[in-house]
Image (tube, rainbow, N blue to C red; front, side, top):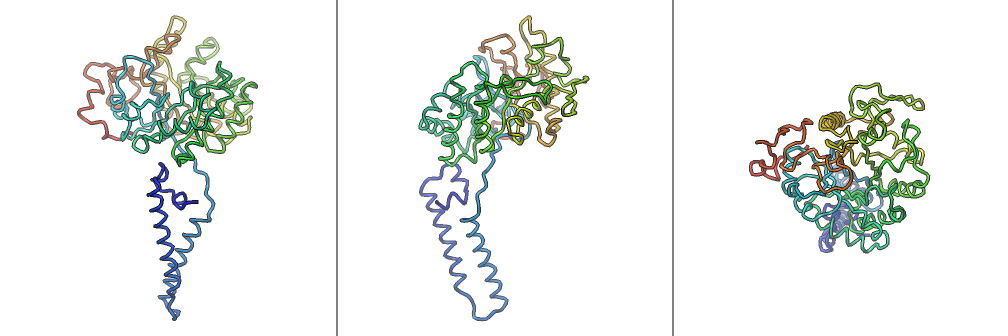
Length: 430
């Protein structure tokens, strides 16, 4: 095995060329020769100089011994910095260019970003920006990647390795809401696709740089109320458990798309809207765990933790990959208002800023990606699907949720006009 692997140099992590690897190996050999020279040049007298040189020789020996023989612990990749992120959906014909989106996100100091593909115009725009990306392998590719490892390798080379390290690609989301969905063939292909993409990363020495995940909807659960009763659906478990076993081995989290908005809309007569909006409320009590919940999102997260524990994965972290509230909807979507959307997203931002866990997992800080940057006018489905955006196409905010320097009106407040004043690659997001 080559020394470059053990040294774990920055270059090696991004696929070190053979010439550079040989140079690193030569440096190690030179160090070893110096060690031998020092060891053989012992003075005849046992004075202070001897002991000084002996200690130096011992240090060199220990360094080389540990370098070659110490066990290598698996590295857990962290694809999320802080607690707050956002989803960048692009099913629209009126949103800004990727370059302008970078300016917008940097001005709002939002560092963590998820996209649903690996569009090269986006990856190029994010180069050198300080923003951290999770790219998506769309569902349409899952079967192909599962069936053909060489296709997975080609995809990773073309869409990930080619843009590292200038574009900070922190993760790959393999599919979205596959398990529990309508395409049962995808269910069986998800694990194979995930393994092939991961193995491609490993062969390219990127497995300790880029995290592999897949996001699940609430449809994977049989029951989620109270939270402690939550388990995976029987027909999902046979696919979920092998996937969780693999994720446990490589240190990946359980990713959940959780929408209190949708839960409330499904049963408005029995769910207090204040509970869904992080407002003062009686909340709910879980008798099995003796825990009280004052907001629905925490309960949804702990329901996922309960299902994971039931499946044998108590230590796996849950990350929210989508959550949000629609600001406009159809006649039967009365809760989809700008006031409710502002309240949910404002309170959620405050809750994440506290950097605390949930009642069941108080030591695991909640992390969430908000859905979404913009309204997406070309999305199918009910009107609410096209109205989750925090920002308008001109860069002004849809409603005030506490971002410094943004205004609710587009007049004289467009963030995109800041591009010429502050530049794309200056004020680094928090």
